[in-house]
Image (cartoon, rainbow, N blue to C red; front, side, top):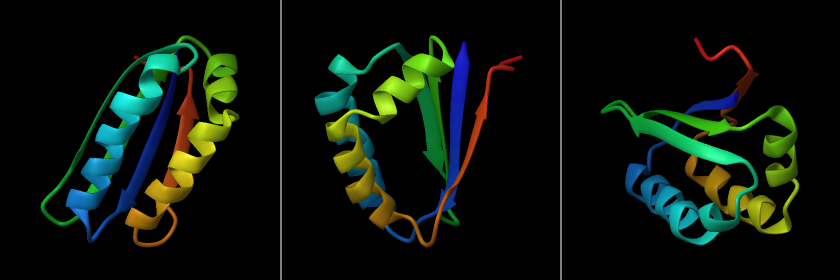
Length: 92
């Protein structure tokens, strides 16, 4: 298993949640190797998102899809500054 953790700050939690819902309905059905996700936005705007994939190759293939890139370009505007990314195969 492979996980990607995205952490950042948002001053527009409603907009970020709408983008996450858009991913769930529009991109998830064809996401390569996607196993599930979880995340949340704290009262102070801290957002933590975790996406699980079968393996790193699946996550990479998914990230390279044009529609994924377009979605992320729109979604990244809801973060105040650049979020951090952490990838890991250690899921324990």
